[in-house]
Length: 125
Image (cartoon, rainbow, N blue to C red):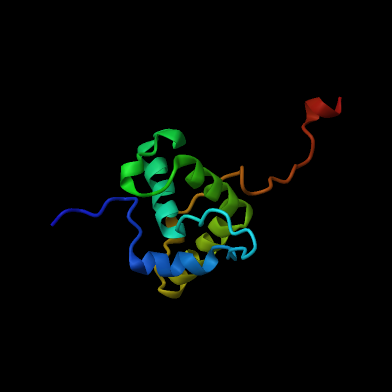
């Protein structure tokens, strides 16, 4: 059996992600072009991030939409806090299943505010 591709979004994962995405109502008076499906766009985003290709080189044959569509949607979802909420949902599930092992955790100072201690002697003089 072939391994699933890393950019394929299965039904179980999609069921967790879809409620976190912002809703967009189509306008009736001037509807414009129909918005490309969020699931396909997410797969396009994951494809670009996994392969490292440039957004504009996303192959149209894959059916993920245009690279710029994926890039814009990534920025839109980032601004809406989708990734932070997804992170929190998945962490909560792991905590609930007692599947987190904090004995191997690392705290990165770029995310945790470092408090300044007493000034060094050479700075006081």
